[in-house]
Length: 223
Ligand code: G3P
Image (cartoon, rainbow, N blue to C red):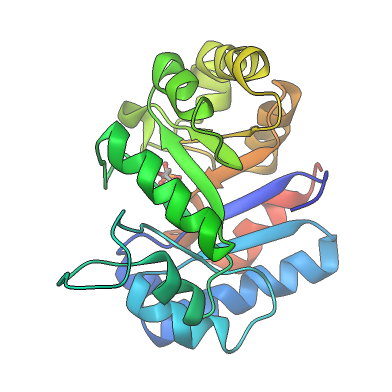
């Protein structure tokens, strides 16, 4: 993941981005990434990682991993398994898939061992600070009340974004900061970058758009 702003598209469990539709969504991401030169990461549901990663060249991330490793565990998602399915990284602790701080730590360690890039999601500046102390590659701050709202965090709550950027600088300047919740336009992305982030994490603005491909082109237009 280079110096250019990053766009991370979480497919969540939306019907519009599942199964073969996940492949199509990832192809749109790839097309826009190639044309714009902006790195776009696709995060499909875990069972779709293998089929999506087999078709596109953009990075595919898992939405979650558990802190367990290979062994006598059932129903868990391991870092090694998503890696072998073709994932290059993973979200950890999304607001819709929260885990304990100790589990975030173990999940980051397992991901690092496997060579996966880690994006730890946080819901406020204090949690951002705690997450940064665990040295993931990225933290992504997302106020839960703005998730899926269409009201962009970069405009509705710029303080949480700049506050997270400042907190991370003090605690662990190697960690890059993303922000998310309600992001849907190129203006929202530009505002996020203005606040010092390295990019955005988003979902509904693209996945639920009438024309997701056009929504993706709009996102990168001001970068
Ligand atoms: O992971 C992205 C997310 O939680 C934000 O969702 O729909 O507000 O872009 P959305």
